Length: 213
Image 1 (cartoon, rainbow, N blue to C red):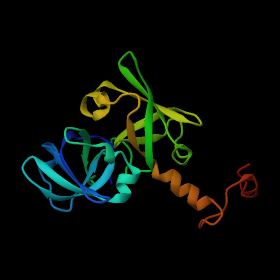
Image 2 (image 1 turned 180 degrees about the vertical axis):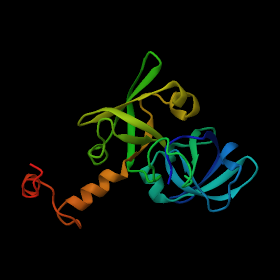
Image 3 (image 1 turned 60 degrees about the vertical axis):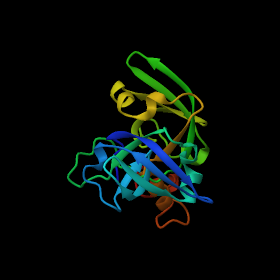
């Protein structure tokens, strides 16, 4: 589990491609201070496992499903990536609960500045957009952000200077792909309240019957 508060940006040093998978070597500093084999590191929003490491690098195995769901297929040596270690139970939750399980990708359709903020509009498919709500949380390449608006085709976020400085967002431009993780609570609520789920279907009749109307 992660918070979406990026600790460090690393640099892809090498990508070894398999038939449908890959192994990625990432250069880093801060997050390696207490790393162990088997630790989870959120890399561009994807929860991945450290398989080997040195004083300033670590490696990750990327399976075919991850390549299909994320922007990892576009990464190459020299690409920057957002990094975050797993959340400790005693840590402050500065962002929101992030699983590191990507729902899909979105494309930056517009980027513009407003005083000290930088705005991004991201287009995405309906299966992703259905879980995104105005003033809700979303993780983009692992960064916890607040949704400022959403419509049938896209949503927007406004990014403060600090986030620009400590993440890869400052290098992103229109046309670039971002990994998107929606708030997990929305998906659980939908499953439990839908026909075939383990809960009751919530509709107007249900609300009236249970004195909510």
